[in-house]
Length: 368
Image (cartoon, rainbow, N blue to C red):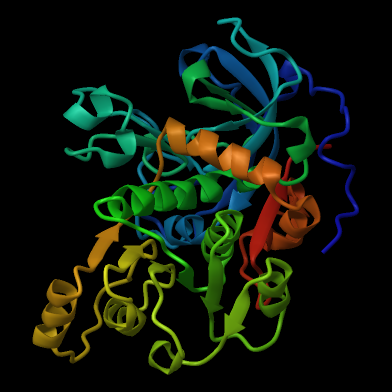
């Protein structure tokens, strides 16, 4: 859906620092506590050397779960959490000298734990062993849904200026960049020549996973239950094939599966559907609380006798964010823009956080 707001890449006057910061906040654990604070304090210099003027934040299922009170953790000493973890902004200043004013950037969401665990100690904070990591807009760090935010330079990812309209997609793209990175690492346990990819779920994660599959020259199939709306056309725009049948009705066995629905029945079906030496990446999170009957013995037999691998993947580290930035820069910008089905100005924040039937990616815009 086209926006009637100025282009995000356009030069806009920076708000004066004495005008206060608008920030979208919640009280963690309290359902429906979402509100827009008009005079939130400026970001503290201790948050990082890079001061950024927000252009936009993307909204995803995690935000909706935080708003529902399912989880979320305010920073130490605070009662409310600024949400928003899918960011895009322009650098105002960087006292470290790493970035220049006007640079287009996104902020890495997860930061390593203070211990640190062995993985966090080497920059693999997406694989944190002890769970003491922090996350902007989710866990113990203020989010990006505010007029200005700060971050340390090593967690700011510089973007190609051409991505000014779609750079807000960097965070979800980093998630699937990690998934593909790990798929390829596992694949090289043997001679590996994959041809066919199945992506289940045509939300933002699924569509971006399909994009990275087509960029690898693979034959990509996307399965989703929607027969109308923008999803079939978006899949066709990648040169991929769209399916609305069940997993078991698909006429092929995929070499790679990226499961993005979290639906328990779909998760089990794709485990059994993968081709010999197949790799199944679980990128969707199940809600839990549901039980289904299945033949665990048959699943075990299929996985063992066919040398198949099933693994879970979440979050991303700096390497994956860089991979994601390169993938977005190579992608068709018109196709990427079509993933954003609604752009909503911050003064209508409640509309942005109310899910619509044809939403794929909703973006809250801060650019004036």
